Length: 504
Image 1 (spheres, rainbow, N blue to C red):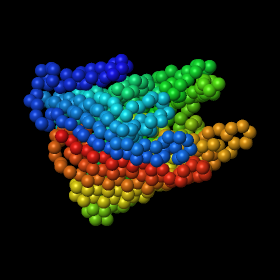
Image 2 (cartoon, rainbow, N blue to C red):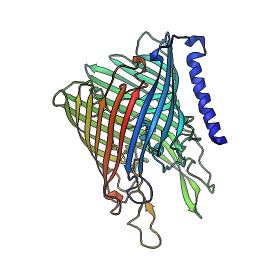
Image 3 (cartoon, helix red, strand yellow):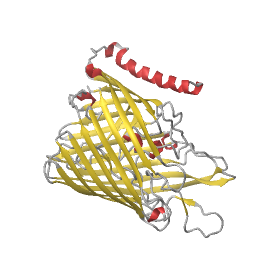
């Protein structure tokens, strides 16, 4: 074991030791340990992917299997509780064992735009937090401090593990949350530095929703991010770990839904609708290549004025079968008052139970994995659920650009193609998408799950661990690129997983 690896391991071990001490070293945590206070989650994942770059360059394929072990420890005394979960991953390739991380292309795969090198095997601290539930007499009220999972039902605002102070209030008629979050580390032995977009970025957020009539919710959400990072000065060399942009952005949204993300919802018709505005200021670095080295040339400052929407409707045909459709659009281009390209908060996963089953599905494709930025998506789906033993969802997506001369946000596609509009003098520049073409492609997804033993986990852990005690799941998608990716790209790409999970 080399010195650097030993230092990383020591940092992770020290953090885990600190977290465990919250549970056991102090007399405040002198609780009687039982089978509900500690456990081990075992996850075996097999992944097949071909090919992320659509055949435009070498690489982009993944074929491997890995084991993900997550020991956890939980303690409670009165209104106080605490939790810690570690993680050990051993794999034959750099595969995705975590759906939250796999929803972020910066953490998915072995060819990374942020310059950080992942390893097949690593140790991590997944969660460590302290919770106080005594501010009010309501059982659904919690104040939690530490690295925790922030989550909202549609996954389009928050769904990630991050260091945060978060207050939540959940009753029959009213739900609310208020918090602050900032990422200080990924707590992994293979990652020394944060991704550039997470460095020095503070998130403030809050939402409130009321059940204005039985089964129907109306809510407001707000999110503000402040990026205080430093951009390179003109003439300075920059690398993949340097920031490309800073600024302050504010999202304000309104949502209405029929508790559509609750798989136990038996209403004959379910719906969701959201509209979000994005405003703020953004300063972006301008760059040039000098003798193979990327150099900062200056900065551009823009006002941001953009919007995004997500609409969906689902019909229950009988107790087992449902069908539905959805449409989403994130603005793109210049609206005349500033940059009109919508972007998401950076804490999103875009995974939700919008098909009406327990299994969460990527809203913009298991293969494409789009971000709602200069993107519009039309979706049709059907789902089947047998009691709490089986479920399956078949989903079709069609994707377009809003502005056919602007790039989209992040996605699970990493193609680089020769610009067909080049004048023919010299080497054609490499582009992600072809100007003038809106058609991004289409995709067909299948997610199917068999559930096993229920009830091994304490009810208090339902927020941190949102799956039954054991399951086998297939999730995969086949993406057919459109004209925006050019004529020389591969005709199909796929990404597929088989997960086996057991929670002791």
